Length: 100
Image (cartoon, rainbow, N blue to C red; front, side, top):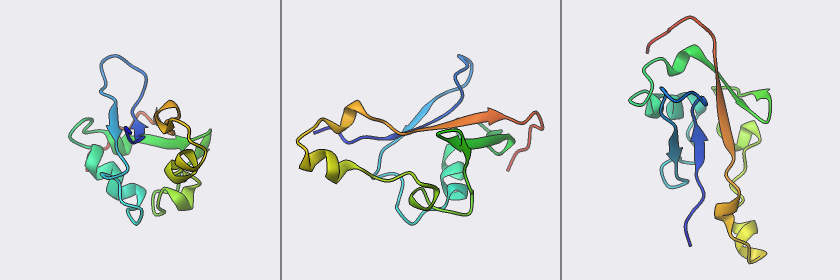
């Protein structure tokens, strides 16, 4: 079964979306570590406010500490296709063009 992933990226056509699989994003990685992984796709990733379900993410915390759970086991238990639900991390531009 195809594993779910996370989406990072704005909705603009000139920016790339990047799907991170659960295997790529470790459970102990902070959001800063994930941001660094996203830099090759958007060099200004630190210029965005990262949000999940309308709430700002704490970049020092992990996905789970920010309320983004890996629900793969629950989908498997319910015999549901987990690929139908992808948690989305949305990036909101801050207009400062910071680069790390």
